[in-house]
Amino acid sequence: MRHDQYQTKEALEADAELLAGIRVEAMRPSLEAVGRFDLERARDRFLKSFRPDDTQIICEGEAVVGFYVVQRHSDHLYLDHLYVTAQYQGRGVGRRIIDELKVEATMSTLPIRLTALNGSPANSFYQKCGFRVVSTDALDTIYEWQGTIDEDGTGSGP
Image (cartoon, rainbow, N blue to C red; front, side, top):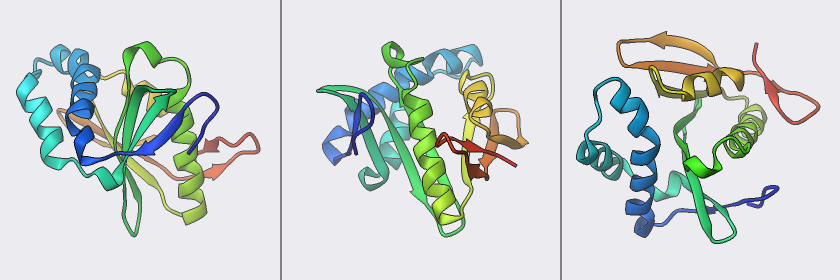
């Protein structure tokens, strides 16, 4: 799929290590802040659950700038991962992915659900994208978006 300045492509099994590295670097500051960073654990946890069929790699030209994983269930879309490399953050890449998922969710009449680590900057990002807090525990916050698409192509929640 082609976007304004980037493309997405399906992941392959051979991409697992590269994507695990992107995930570890993206999560490192948040995990360190809560005293839970363990390089091997973070890497292995991703590799054990890696499903290429659910994974899209985000590229700008030949450069891999991030990836996302969406599990499609009968009653919701679950955004399991969305990571954009540090040098591409703040350029609207993640927001465009979210907006495209909102279109898919609206067309399918399904909510989007996700989990974010407490204290992570991802929490404010998802809230700005219209996700609402469903529940919170000591480590994570669960979010949901269920809304409609506005005329500008973005979505609004209830």
